[in-house]
Length: 117
Image (cartoon, rainbow, N blue to C red):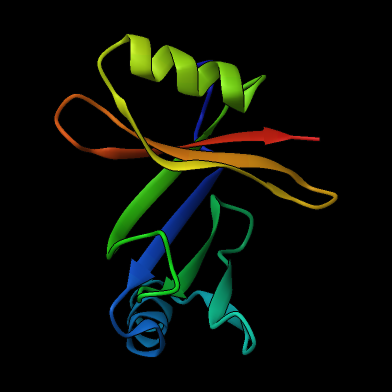
């Protein structure tokens, strides 16, 4: 596979409980940014990720999204739509890091797109 996943994001109805669950299950250390209510997972060198809170202020519903690297998020979003998918979260930029978006496949499964700076 020439485009392995680079990030996994868990959005939970109770982020604190989910962070405790995954920490206990896998032995992950999770550093929580209290302002964002988002925990960055330190999985010891394996796939990186985070666990955040679902809610009215979040465009992300409860569930898991795996992010795959692409050269250009806007172009990848267009390809997803042309292939029968849909845009679930429009592209947004994380200053100094890169651009992300979430698309749905024809069955509604969510997949994240990531282009690092």
